[in-house]
Length: 265
Length: 255
Image (cartoon, rainbow over all chains, first blue to last red; front, side, top):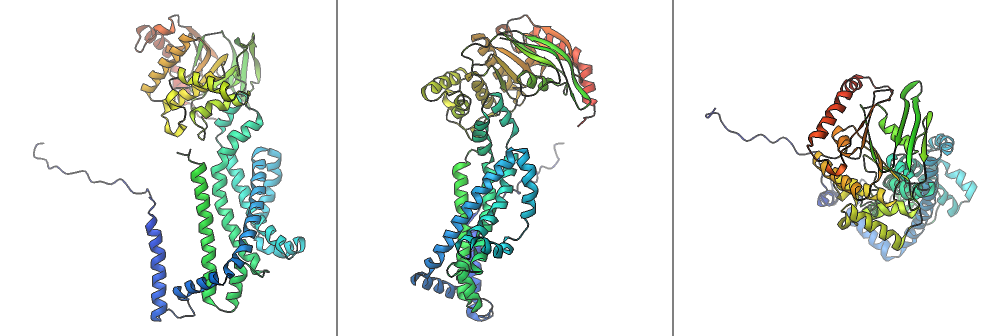
């Protein structure tokens, strides 16, 4: 045995554990923009295919300097906030009711399943008749669009609350209302928040759709106008605003999660 | 306050899981219930605490619970059942809030039970920061806070490693010695049963019936790890159970 050769054991573990590396994400953006800039300047990307990133930036600067940015952003944000607040709050309430009561569940789950796949944009004409051509129909569209995913996420989250915790509450004689408030709602919060990520992204999509179909001001109207004039710089400036809105919404939800879900292991 | 079980029987559909269980749980004694897996011992415990209803027979409460008792029948669960979003203190105050105990009165109770379970330094910790043994201590503290007349313990040490189990058994014995409590202790671990039980009730395989009740006279405080008397009791229990346990193990699961 003494002359047998010694070798280190080959390492074959590790991996499959993604770690966040923030700077790579930024690098991808920077590289893409640099490639686009270089391509458009040197001419192998024609001006009709893609606008020069530096021109988009310039357009954006003008938009800001002329005050038009806030003229468009203001109404858009108002619609987003009102519509999403309505849809999310009604959605969470209905979702909790579905999670708690068998009758509500049996009655509403098929209905929700029936309205979930309807493209809400298709209903815009109907909303215009019901709520008028003004802000009402836009609020309704965004509210309706955020409502269904929020309901589904919420009752799923309520269903997933650990039953042993509920039994524990009952065994200590907690009232029904205490169990709902102190055990079910906090336990469902992680699921509700991850549903919120999806429904708020849908809200942004619907916001633009609603504004494209009838609004004087708003990011959607701005993009539509730029598009019909083939003004690619302005079109891209509008798109960048939308994606910034998405990133900010996501960041807000991540912040709330860090603050309120620190108890998760 | 005593608990009396009279002719408890239960079936799921036409599948009988428990038959004619009659048992007295006298005040200030720890009754251990052991049996092969699937004999319905945890179900029996849920019947005693009113979390489930037996189809036949009844669970009786004989006499009144002490006046200061907030929740006469109080569980300790195998998986601790702590709210992960509340601190140790918050988990205990949860069960006091519904009785209108807040502020200074609550603080007094919480400080007392934390001291009794040696958790005073961990009042502000979240469950995720605690080891399994500590979590179960918190659950025990929470149970003590409502001054139960009967503690219903459902495999309370089964999720813990064997060293922690020894430590917690010592803790339970010293808690009982200082202030005797009534408990029904369900376990599949015979060492726990002979260490903590004044009486050990052996259930048979499905349908669960009482096979034998073994009384252990030795006072709790004199029992120790590796005690020869206890080993004899444990052997006797195992002889009673071995064949049943094997048969239960080989049984197909009906779902």
